[in-house]
Each structure stands twice: as C-alpha cells, then as structure tokens.
Image (cartoon, rainbow, N blue to C red; front, side):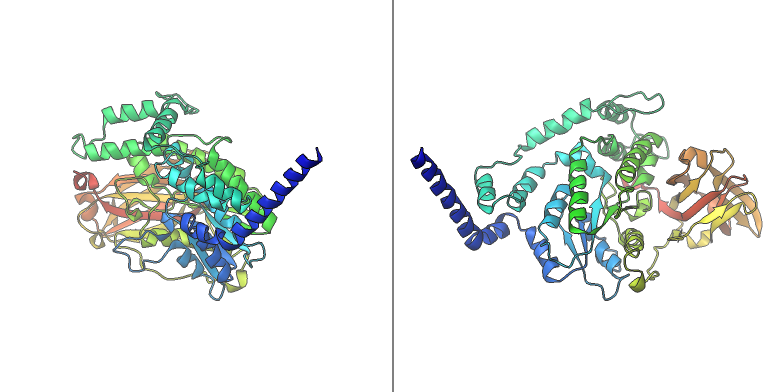
Length: 485
C-alpha cells in the first residue's frame, strides 16, 4: 500500500513539474499559435487600458464611402480624451469568446469598465451552430482556466465541440423545424421552418406586383435569423451570465452594447410578426441584465436606418459611418456615468444626403394636448435625390396609455399651404406601454412629394396622456426592388 501511495505521489509530482515546465517554456508559443485572440487581452493590458471594448466584425466593418472608416470603439473613445482605452475585436466572435478574452486580462490590470457587444442574432441557432463554430471552439481550448498542460492535452486529443459542416447544418435545421414560436395572438405557423416555407412560396412582390426572387430570399433570411424566442437554457445566456459574474468578481463596470438590427427591412419584407419576436428578444435581454447592479444595457435595437446597413442582401450588424457613430454616441452616454468630468458630449459628423435625424441623447420631449406637436423635422423636397421612391420614418418613444389618436405625421406644403399628409398611427407601430420602444414605418414618395416645396415630419399627440420622445429619424431611399433584380 505504501509503495502504491509513493507511486501516486511521484506521478503527481511529475505532472506538476511537467505542467510547470510546459507553462514556463512552451505555453505562450502554443497560445499564439492556436489561440492568437489572447494577444488582444495582452495588448489592452500592456497599454494600461482603463476602458475596454469587446466585439466582433460589427466594430471594424466599414463602407468604402465612409469619410471616417474607424471602429465603433474609436468613436466611443473620442468622447473621453486622455482616458486610456482599447478594444479586443475578433471577427465572428460571440459571448463565449468575449468571456475568455476578458478572463485572460490579468487581475492586476487597471481595467475599470468593459463594454461587451450583444447581438440578438447570436442567440439564434443559425449563429450558435455556424460552420465557423468548430474553429472557434478549437481556438478557445488553451484559453480555459485549467492547468496549461491539461489544456494542451485537450487540444491534442480534440476534446472540444467538433462537428462537420453537415452536422452543423443538421443541427440548425433541427432547431428551425422543432423550436416552437408562440405569439399572444393567432398565428398560422408553429415553427420558423413552417413560416419560412410559406414566405418562400408566397414571395415578396415589387412595386408593380411582380414576384421578386432576391427580396423573397432576403425575407426568408429574416425569418430564419430572428424567428426564435430566447429561453434561459440558451447557450449564449450562460455565456453572458458568466461575463456578469466575472465583472462582479473583478469589480468592473459592465456595459452591454445591444446592437441595432435592420428593423426597417424586417418590417418591410416580413411584417410586424418578425418585429414582435425581435422586440421579445430585446425585452428578455433588458429585463435579465438591465436590472443588475453595476450593469448597463445600451439599447440600440431600432436606431439605425436601412441605408446605413452595409449588407443589403443579408442580416448583419455592419454599419456605415453614421450607423457606427449612432451606436457609439449611445454607448458613450452610458460610459459617461463613470467618467463625467472628461466626457465630451457633442462631436460633429456629416449626416448623409437624404437623411435627417434628431437625437436628444440623455433628454426627451414630452408631447400631450397642451403641446400636441413635437420633435419636428423640416426639409425641402428639392434637396432630396429625385430617384428616391420611399422614406423610412422611425422614432424612439414612451407612452403611458394606448390610444388611436397619437401618430407620426408627414405633411407636405406648397406656397405655405398644406397639400397632403400621412398619419402613421403609433398603435400600428408599437403596443408598448410604460417603457421605451422603437417605431418604424415606410411610405412611398412620388411626384406628389416632389411637387411640394416643404415637408414636415413630427409626433402628434392630441390626448392628455403624455408621450415622451427621444429621437426622430427620417431616411429617404431608392426603391431597391429594382436594384435587387
């Protein structure tokens, strides 16, 4: 028995020695070779960063038309001159990657505030079972908090989530066909697969009523991408919970950057049912993480207009300059709670032609019967590109009661006389009561619009129940039914 104990003790000592030798002389090279993301954590540590932004391709993707092609994180940091800031950006990353990057920041690093990207898409199985996931899981093995030698054995023996592309595809298809979607009103389909199939056969028609194949494919992408409901057993929930726990252990301020989705196109091509699911996912995340001490969720979900999304034939969070700046401004407002003395609020930038935006930032305007009109955008149709055939109108607002009367109004004037108007009922765009919500609507524009010499777009609320509005966003765009043929 003593000999057996001696042998086990000798073996344990040998393993400890081997682990020390490996960690001392070989582990760093293996990290760089197999898990080069860790260099991002090393860099923000070497730079003595106080604020760290963590994200994926949304942070660094830009349009070739952008005057300023820098990252979202760079635009955020512009608001805090003199504060040491850095980013850890890795394309195709998700919350699990963010967690291990953050965990690999040394505990004695001067980091105080971390900003973590949150995409609604990443909670869907189209992303969870992406064909890139096996490569991502391989890169994470050496980052996990086990003895380095153990991690290296795990990597050598491929003890991580390995699936072929065919297996990933089968997993995606299984969830598409079997995960139920439940609405609080009658709905014809019980799964996204049924809904997707129906939309593919129903199709999307162009402005002349002709079936448009590319837009039908895009509509189906929206259903597959957002046609799910987040539950507590979702793998991404575990990852974000781990980030919250890590931030609490390290004493960090934690800001989740909930990115904007293209709600304009989702609504236009699929309708209010897909917006219901997007809103439900949004509400789940805000309710779960927005009420935790020292955790902030920055809600950008409906704040970027269609023209600012670079990928017009796919569902991504890749924005041109104004979209990235819109996201950055909102995140900077959240960061300013921790660094108010060095916060620079207003940073000028160019707004694209055909686009108008009022964003009150920290403030909001109250509109009710005593002041029934508010947050007005005025312009001249002559200043709008004559090829534009539609306008997206969006707002962010709060209402205390439901009423059929409040509306977003577009009026046209000729020689000072009102010639035309459209009322977009708030009830048709949002049923949210007692919370902030986005609205989005699209209107066609034609010669009636261009014959006017002034347009006005504003919130109208003739009722005694106040509506609070933070932003109004108007984007005149080309009709890309023709462009996608």
